[in-house]
Image (cartoon, rainbow, N blue to C red):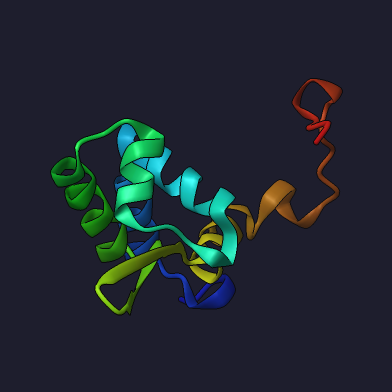
Length: 113
């Protein structure tokens, strides 16, 4: 059975597994914040204060889970959050939210962004 954006159960488990690590979650969030411009590993390593070889491992895991894309620009690699996969994951998780009824968000969980 397919879900929002073509996300299936196996892909969902892979994505959640990749995000279930503190450092990978931080890396993914940093890439979400970077937006479509993305980031190079050196900028991410400095920003997150993590060794480049460790960061490389985590980026590889996120890419394997389909959560990030990699583009080579000259000698640099640009990593970007894959927003369609992220939205697919969210869609899969909320597809039958509140049994198709109206879901209300409490004030305590409201974001004042």
